[in-house]
Length: 232
Image (cartoon, rainbow, N blue to C red; front, side, top):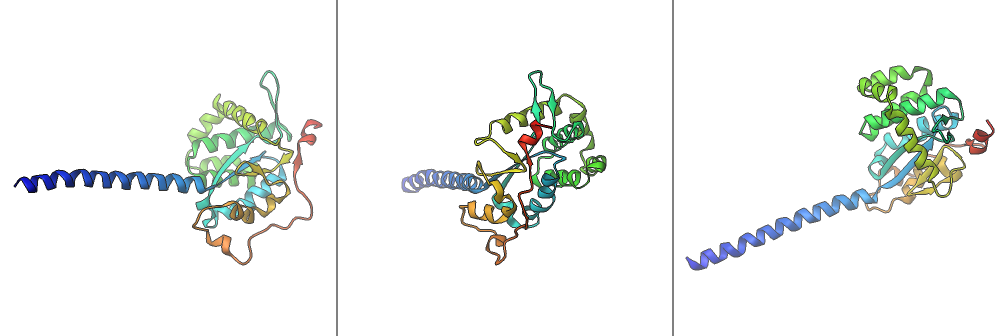
């Protein structure tokens, strides 16, 4: 009987340690998988036609494929706007752009899922004259409108202004795309190939092994420069 009791005493701590190891291993695995993701940041403004094209066409490739599994996307709707000393915000394409930037900031804040965020932003950018229907279709009309019509929208934009101004190197134009903190410059239209190249994880998405990686053909760099905003 003493032997049986002693065996149980040894067995229980062993089981506990085994469970503790499995939990720790699983947590580390989740953290590792998350850290393996390519950090994709898009700095843009709502009425820039080149930003609109990038959002509707290029970003769509992430959500239409398994590329989203390895991509951590952050959208920053501020672009070439300017904040004065009294916190007045002036946008490159006028007051309407400031309104839409704020609306999209509220959409990003309200919708926690990246797919829902992109669906909302894409809807607005595809037809900026019909943004109200995008708010309704989001399923979170009240929350987005409350944010947009209240003080929160400006706070969000000022936060995005800070993130944009803190970029190193400074952004030169929009769309300004960074992967893991480094700007793509004029390679932004080769987004899929650049994400696949930057990914250091083991499970490579099928799209990355495709014989023909998607690349949007452009005859010249299609961007809105910061200098144009300053002289606007």
